[in-house]
Image (cartoon, rainbow, N blue to C red; front, top):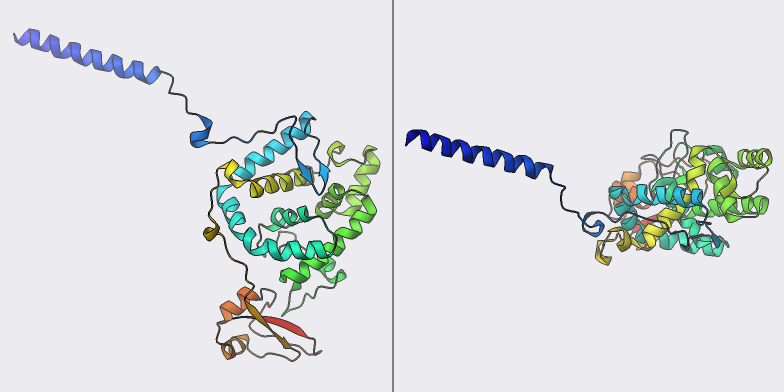
Length: 298
């Protein structure tokens, strides 16, 4: 009896082992893309545009380059979610200024590609949502000093970017090439066009960053305009509201302490900086008596 029981238990153990091994070798059940992933795909007959100029996705190279940026940005989750939230705050201001200056609305996505709506500083020293270098900023009328950096003034920097873009449009004729020049510089782009004997962005072989730049902008546009298509489902109340409830206080003298200045209006220094990121320090020295408009949230 004992021998039979041992044999019986051994047989069961062997059966379980074989079953587990066999199960481990089975092909896992197929999971549809719609359950976990929505892998971006660019159809050869797809309709993608930048600033009124069509992206020629029937060209396999163009199609694959755009697909790469769609995949990278669709699965850059934290940044894409924040860009969706921040677009409700920043786009109304940017769109209005672009329209006033005759710049295509799609250039608002350039600001996203440049900075993710952050007043960031690049390794090269470019700052603000539009990523101006100091010399270029000053050439277009933006003040950069110890106490003030108007590269971080949304309205003024956007107007300066419009003038910059207009200049490139006059030079290159195409809005796509204008955006490419914004990224790599007019001289560099002109040299490449001259050397390669082509004047169409999609036929040029440029540095890696600029090669990807237009495609990144178009991918950002596609995702922000159709977020649900890429798995982002944000309700209106989840978006960040515009910072448009403020009064303007005009000053033409120095302010010894911006904390004291803020307290006069019943707000914190933190809130003052949130509405006026172009104020760089805790003071505003103004020896020349310049006029500044400071936003005071209501």
